[in-house]
Image (cartoon, rainbow, N blue to C red; front, top):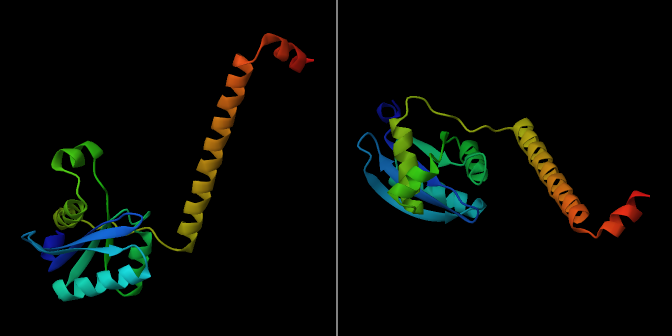
Length: 169
């Protein structure tokens, strides 16, 4: 278990503009400190300093969305030699039942990592990033095509019949 291998886990709830951090002590899972930092290079440096102040020992970063909004933070931490694991957000309904709060989500990420048997390392690298961008572009193109077809069908169905006859010629 991860709780036997580290002293602290820094849980991170990621968002577009800022990330919520929670330092949790292992194995008890008690919250040591919490903070929010901007989702940019300056914020990533603040996050690392925050962890160094409050989690001085063996630590792991448990980042929700390390392949999305947390990708920049995960890369920055990995470059600094920090261990980063990716945590799933969990079922949306379950999160709503327990309350939706960024600091709670960051704590939940840390405690989820503590309870896990194996760490899921974030997918990274230039090829991985290129593939992610290609898939994003393809998904967008498919969606745009679908919308255009729906619009075209609705125009054909709703236009006056004399327009359809003239169009068919």
